[in-house]
Length: 242
Image (cartoon, rainbow, N blue to C red):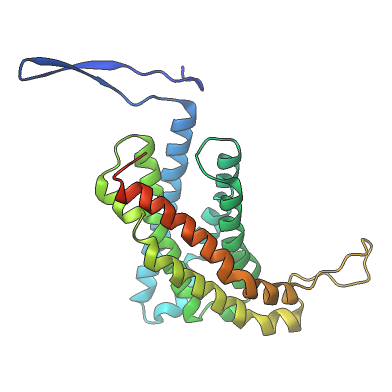
């Protein structure tokens, strides 16, 4: 029976007459859970990428990308909220704040803007956004899973810490384009806003919130981008792997 403590074993390897002992990766409940979680995420985003490619080659092209992928994308994006808890509980190395910023940024665009405004579904920025997310995640989650199992190939590490360099800025621009395009709908329909008077005596103008967010978005993005570049320097340039 497995517990949160770890156990390992050694096996005897003979090589040209010399004896070597190789320690197997430690097996823990935490490690197995995280490996299963990352494998599930990889499968989900691979499914989304498949539908992206299928949509692109269909008669309607990019215009149907979001319609054909949104159920899978919303499901696995919602599930990724667990990564905030993973960081907070110490299951993974990383800042809970950084995880929260990444999750809330994506979720805001996906759930509060893109999915609530069907007129944006056929916008090229929506297709670009889903493509970028899917491409990055079909590399990121397999890297996590194989790293946990101590069988991550060097080429996957290189992809994990290189592919984001072009994809991350493109994704950020697509998010901002969708927010700008959403502004007239947010204002006219008062989506996600709370009007006064109400029983709680609380008001919230989501339209104004998005306007303010657009102003600071590049600075928040730059902070996260620099964090990833710093991680890349340690992982790729120094040749270290988890």
